[in-house]
Structures are given as C-alpha cells and as structure tokens.
Length: 262
Image (cartoon, rainbow, N blue to C red; front, side, top):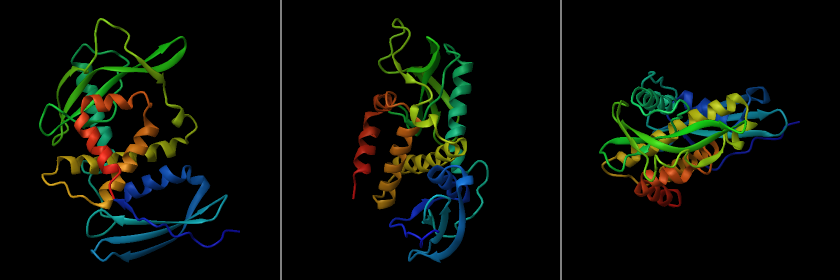
C-alpha cells in the first residue's frame, strides 16, 4: 500500500502544459507505470500559478511534484505550434539538416545536434553536424566536419562552415562512440520523447538568457542550466561534448559559471 505523498523541495519551472507532461515522461517513463491521483492549484507570492501533482508509482510510494509557471498567469495557456518550446530544437535541427543537404559537401549520414550561440555571428546559433556511419557492423558517430549557422530570431539557416580543427585530408574524422548512446538504449520511447521535449524547453530558456541584454541572475536560471547540461549528457555521447566547447568556449564557460551559482 502506498504511503503519504513526499513533498518536493524545489518547484519545477514549466512554460506550458506540453512541457509539464514532457517532464513527467522524462522523469517517470512509460505512463503504464504511473498515474496521477491528485492535482492542487495555488498561487505563488509573485502571482505565478503553482500546481502540485501527486503521482502514484505502481511499484513505490506516491510522489508529489510541484510545478510553477515560468511567467505570471495561467499554467496551462496553450502555445501555438510556432511558439511551443518543446518543439524548439526539432525546428532548428531540421532547418540545419535541410540546409546542409542542399549545400554540399554533405555526407549522407550527417546528423544535426544541439545548437549553441555562434561565436562569430551576432544573434545566431551554430549547429554541429557530426556524421553517423557503420564501420565493422557497428553504428558510430564521428566528429563533426562542419557546422550550420542558424538565425536565432527566425530559425532560418544562413550558412555553413568547416568545424574548427577539422582537416578534410584526415578522413574519416574521429569516432566518438557507438550510436545511439548507451544512456538511451534501454529508455522507453515515450521517456526518450519526453526527455527531448523537456530539454528543448529548458535549452530554449538558457539560450534566451544568454541573448538577453541584461542577464538576470536567479536560482531558476541556475536550475535550468544544471538540468540542461544533465539532459544533454544523457542525449549525447560524452565524446561529442567537447566539440560544443570548441564551437564557443565563452558560452561553455558561461554555462559552467551559472551551473555552480547559488
């Protein structure tokens, strides 16, 4: 029999109902293994909505998850398809992939990964484009030979360039590891979907903070940066992570600083 709910110490920030459900999938996995038994609404001192959700796990106690809206107002305002942050990364990565395919040289196994702020262009993102290939019967991901520049405001691809340190004479590039990462091999497909959607929303907020004229230090920004780095480490090979730093060392240091703030 389940015991009483466990109150969580820190509220989970979400932008919309889609992100809230994505968080639940990312944390609890296959919905067949859990169900919601209670929902309670309240107001935070700053006017934002708080929702406490009691989740009954089929194999353990009831867990209480506390959500807080990212902005003042209802927690469940519907976002339009172009504004829904859970699809933010998909849109940018699809734009990068389409541009790369239309602008050779393009390897057929090119795989767009997650965007970071461009170190060379204002209000732009750089998307690393590693290569997925099979060698000796094993699928592997190889270091990105190029990257695609995306306009941060419009999401449109603006150009492509050789990845820093890439030598076209030294082919194939460095093998980073088996693909998909071992962190994903046993993950339920809905949990993977939720993890990607939640990461998309959190990463969108991190990028918004980076591009802001005045960066507002806050515990919520620290929490977003920490969670974003944790989820990226699950979704990517560890061997790929240094390539993000190579694209923009200043942003990488900014992430490290904010992840340890507070």
